[in-house]
Length: 459
Image (cartoon, rainbow, N blue to C red):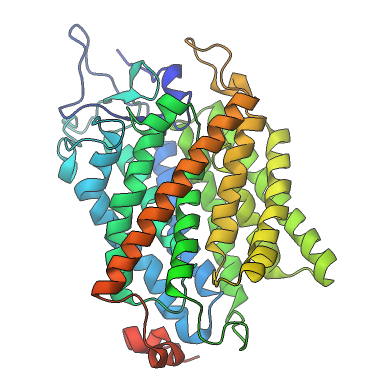
């Protein structure tokens, strides 16, 4: 007998985006039934989605960020994204996955999946069986994909989140400090928030009722706020506001942004955890919001400066992708259009007016795009959510936009901001007191490619 994943487990986002493993044992078997089999169509889509999301970091984000720094820091910037991919793969495998997606308490998960203990235990003679998980709803259900695929899919989320932060302190952080910060921040900041929102007993989803389809709070607000704190703690680049700090190669940046856009279909549509209608709607809303935000940023910049720029339109499109992330599986195309238009305008203000007014050096607009875009998207999810998209047998009305839902979204945004800001500040200060955060003035002037890695671009 094949057991399909129940609708109730899909209500709050990625069927497992509000789902998490409740077991510390082998895939569950009903007492009187054969093991549940995987769905090959769902599994195929999730394998593709996992590859797409990984592509968002390497090479997507790596090229996007590298194209916006000066020539002497291009390799170091690429190195940051690539090394974080390697580091976070190990951290997620050893501890992060278990602490996020197993039952523990409302604050943090358990240790039943440390070192991926038990993952793959259901594979026998070339076949695989589904595994039991607890959802953010009361009902327990069964995944239709192998646990190994779910684990790796979520690993790609854990990889891109700290990589996004690097845009805020580009061209001035020590590589050793980056490595330490990545490990500590992912376990102390990212994992708890992911568990609160998506875990089986996480309190933000179960107590507050906030929804986050694919990571508006967990990924983007988390990364954006951490980036802002890092930019303030580390300080501005030498010559900021006085010297020419213009991008080395916007061709790299537009290629990177394009890869991010394509990869985002895995990020959002993949968070439906199946090849189904909700995945199709999430793909449509993702495309619409990105395009709308690109247009609104371009028009705002055109009106302000008299010229639309490549950097502007790609930044706007990424802002739209960020903003639709928490809403993608909850809103219809009309709502996606409004979210995208709003995100483009507000992120433009955040990346230009707010940054210059406050005087902080968010080098590549990690806060201006991801932090502000994530906040806009999370709040507007509470406005434009369309009930039937999240309807279940237990909740036939689903989750619709309302004042109470908007308040729940605002609470989750505030909690994420407060948690991330305080813990990120403490971690950065501790690292600064021990091994130091910032390169020396001479190293910064020489460029991180040579001073930190002993390499340079010759052409």
